[in-house]
Length: 207
Ligand code: VGL
Ligand code: ZN
Image (cartoon, rainbow, N blue to C red; front, side, top):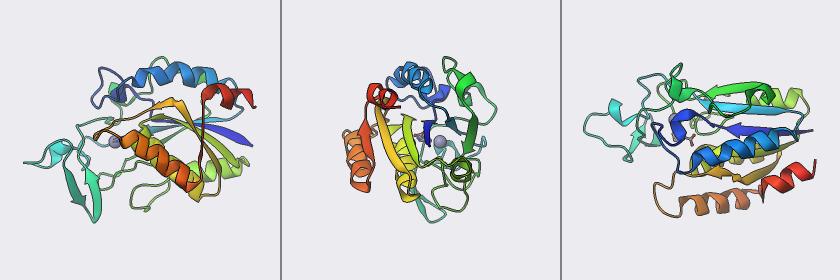
């Protein structure tokens, strides 16, 4: 059983949002097209409290992009984004939500970030995505969304670690690229871990 996993296709990551991923809006039509080819579609949402400790605003003297230690884990500081129950945290308006069976929220704990849609960065808590997929007999996932070099990458690495056959739908992803080359390195890491890279046309066509 296959599932499509849509990662963080939320207003704050689109042009005009708080943490813009360049050309992030271009993944919306890709998602809408691909959803029609899948029997099961799930989505994740970055869903932070207003005082989340990944926000530079919570660390006086620090700036966006700084790297700090957060309760023993390396943490990049971000602008305030995807604050729960704000418009920026909503799924992109153009996304066809009628085809999404379930949405999983992550990053809800103030003290730990959660790039992966499966577990927080400290692997303290599961979002429920793993159990949900297993209950439905899913053994293969196609992952796309935002951002290639953060939440897509870590979702893919966890999916591989959970023994799911994992494909990254590359034309359905866009990256932050804090440093030039981050997206390319993320793709290499996902491939090295055992994921495959596909284009949406092929991903939809093989089903
Ligand atoms: C993300 C940075 C901070 C993402 C979320 O969805 O890739 N990136 N929070
Ligand atoms: Zn976040």
